Image 1 (cartoon, rainbow, N blue to C red):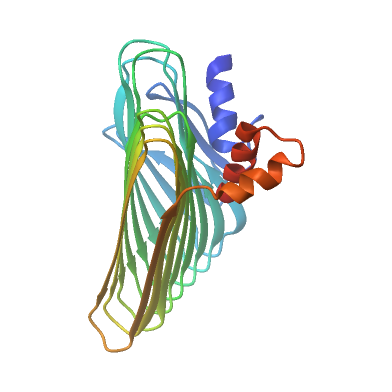
Image 2: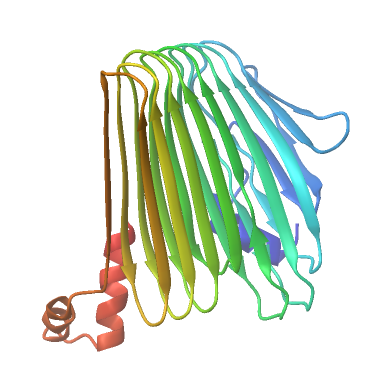
Length: 305
């Protein structure tokens, strides 16, 4: 990997050296490095379109890193990654994609991740998106995430996109069984003329299943964001979805929280708030010696943590 790819890898996966545990690093459409462990196997799909990650039942305190980096202008790819997480496992999965585009052609990575989570398994999933480059070509990322959760399982998802992605359409679908718990925390910042659409559909299918889907975002300049979150209660369950957004400049934000109750004991809540930064917050920080721009940056950084 060259220096540009290594820098992007640090941005999307916090990797400065070879990670411990299992990993599969993809660079410009090809596998750049791979490692498996006794409990985690990574297998290339026969048609070359992605990988299967198989985690043995009972695997504890292990991690899988599967980052993707693109530094070639005009490269477009769709990758399918399937995760089979054995029951009673407790693992961390770190994904993400970074694009450096200094050319005139658009670069695009569409990643389809499917998670099959066994009974009582616990998964923490981190997905970061990042873009850079001074070329006219766009940096486009369209992730699709499908989560199929068996009884008593738990999935915590951290979805982060803070810089440099011109266009993204994120689609997440989850099927949650009895006693299973899904938590999603999305953090998003757009600027310039960027567009970002987040579309969530969560089906709570079993008794005592639950979901908590929360998005925090900042839209600057002339960018556009849409947050569309739908929680469907098909059994006695608990569901919550929330959008909290800061709007700046000439940006536009559309929040569409949706609830559908198909059971008398489905308890569902939605919240949405969009507003500008309060003037008194900026003034207070400026009295401490910050400029207006520095004050805004401090407020945004704190909001997106």
